[in-house]
Length: 104
View: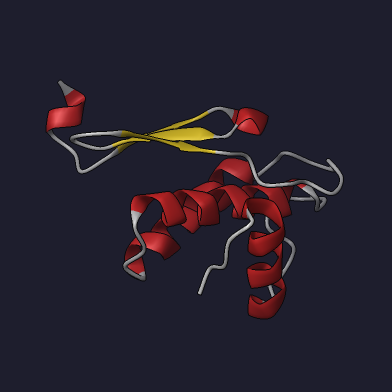
């Protein structure tokens, strides 16, 4: 079984959020709030970038999934693949708005 060979299995559900399966639990990650849907191109890459960021910074799976979800939401608000930049303070505020918790 795949789940026995990896630390986690991530299943994305688009605007419905995602699930992260670990060895002993399923973590339900809600979709982040999107201000306006402009272009979904590159959202999977943005989500994956959020996962990598969370893992590299030692976040737990729930926080990592939420960071990934917000990266996808921010991307869908932009035209083009990855033509935007992020301000860390704005990202933290958007995280708080989307998930009613602090990233810090």
